[in-house]
Amino acid sequence: MTTPRPVHCAAVDLGATSGRVIVGTWADERLALTEVHRFPNAFQSLGGHDYWNLPGLWTEIQAGLRKAAALFPRLASVGVDTWGVDYVLLDAAGRLVFPTHAYRDARTQPGLKRLAQSKADLAKVYAATGIPNVFYNSSLQLAETVASCPAIRKLAHRCLFLPDYFNYLLSGRMENEFTIASTTQLLDVASTDWSRTALRHFGIPAGWFTKPVLAGARLGKVVGLPELKGTQVVVVPGHDTAAAYDAMPADPSGTDLFLSSGTWSLVGFESDTPVLGPRALKARVANERCGDGRYRPLTNVIGFWLLEGVLKEFPDRPQQEAERAALNAAAAALPPPARLLDTADPAFANPPSMRAAIDAHLRKRGATPPAALAGYLRLICDSLGQGHAEAKARFEQMTGRQFRRILVVGGGSRNKLMCQATADAAGIPVVSFALEGTAVGNIASQLIALRAVEDKAAFRGSLARNLDSTTYTPRR
Ligand code: LFR
Image 1 (cartoon, helix red, strand yellow):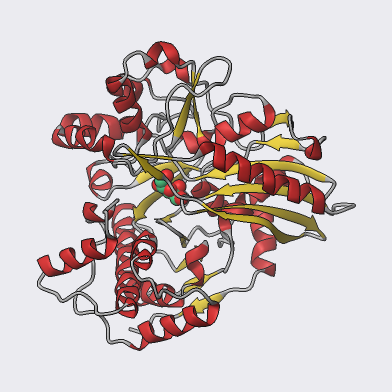
Image 2 (cartoon, rainbow, N blue to C red):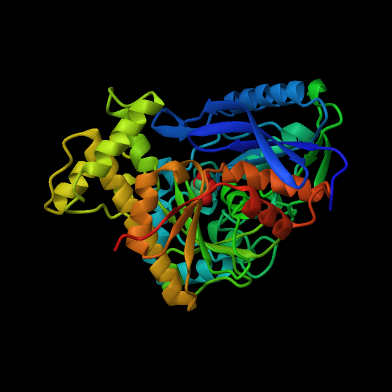
């Protein structure tokens, strides 16, 4: 299919540590990207709890979209993706009726432990939703909100997840999107609707949700931003990881394992069926969903959150590209660490000091902490490589699949040490695409909705033909 003239779409792409507005231009069967706005993001602590700064995020989104419209006056559409699980509670007029906690807030710990202690409940909730018991789940967060503030049942009219909320601010329409709904542990693993079993188990009002809409739906034109008059709000996979998986230039044979690498490392694949049962539950397989309704069985490995935390504690951390390259070279020249980190240790979830948490973890295992930043970088990259390889091995055992390559997108795909460590530990090539996969998958969905691109396979075919990649071959 050829497009008569270029089509421009804006992706609002929010990560836990940074946000972007990126315009994708589709012309001659190729995508060109223009990053028009980038800003840091972080949750903030207040009175012992962690919260997102929603007005700040909305201000940045508007600033980014204005820049996009100034550069591309014929902006056809806009789509929003964000990290998973976090939500707002609104009254019927759209006002916030509860503060928006960040998913690393420790308020879910008692609920997490309670569910972990009941084998029957764990199995019931996993069979119903395909999502394991993890501290950040919206289910645990909402259950805590309802238990600590019973009046919320009456105050709140709707629960929107963050991409849904920004879609609402942009379009005036309150809808729940399907992929972001699949991160909550409240969606039915066997259908495309909410799980009555899970909602009942966690005591969450079913009336707060409407049947999730699939990617491709149009919410109408942008309201309240005169610069974007005429631009359509399109529902894209609202979960950033779902968007990133859509942007994988995968082999149609299904033999590629995916790694979306950033604050988290999301290791998984696409499947027509979920991966369930006791082994999957033990391996923390999350059966999240693709924009089209299929499954993305994946495991969350802690990711570069480890490094982001450690960097904060080194005032002489690199600021410039040349300094970063020197640090990477120093880390690569070090001998392999004697002991790797167990990336599943809950002590890394939200420690006051990441460096202290790593040091304590190593000492408990009889190892000496690194002396300098390069040592931490090496330790983290090798440990992530190991964590990725273990996830691959478990998926192969559970499904009988054999993965031939690991495809990497996301900010972390530029990290050569991590890519090489992953190839070495997994024993298969790692193919890295220095690509903002989350934004690209977001744009892909818009292009398909606008009928500029036929489908996901056609989009991936174009990426595979046009993208530069680096292949890391296992060294042992
Ligand atoms: C990545 C991500 C992961 C999700 C985590 C928390 O940005 O969306 O997929 O598990 O953030 O929401």
